[in-house]
Length: 137
Ligand code: CTP
Image 1 (cartoon, rainbow, N blue to C red):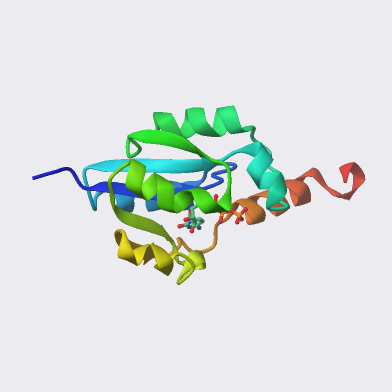
Image 2 (tube, protein in one colour; image 1 turned 45 degrees about the horizontal axis):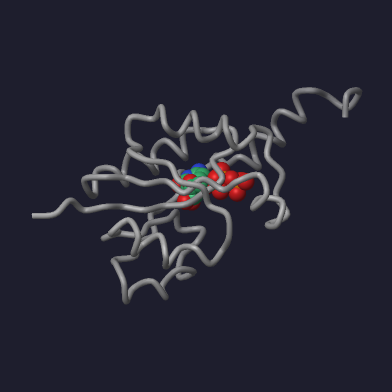
């Protein structure tokens, strides 16, 4: 039997427990987990700025025991190519993306997992900002 390859994408800025739990749950669903990490250039196209540069976000993801391979996410259109190139059997994202990638169902299974509640990079950034206080903002 061939290995079941799982593919997910994200920015993974300020790596937090919501990211970790998603990757842990995904890795349990197959044999190899590939993570597409958004490059700094792609994030700026998306109107998103990151605290942690791409190379560091990749380094952290590669050190995560649940991740087998990290690839760059450079544009919206690469997903179909990546699914075919890496022999992906399951494409999965957190459920903030529910329904957004159903078009890939002709190529592989598509799954949206519930997000971990009460944590996100956006919330962490707001918290850090608040901790710095009004004087430093
Ligand atoms: N994710 C999750 N639970 C969270 C936060 C994120 O399961 N609490 C998942 C997302 O659904 C996505 C992946 O982790 O599939 C990467 O998400 P990313 O956008 O990098 O993280 P967020 O914390 O959601 O970042 P932001 O606040 O900038 O949107």
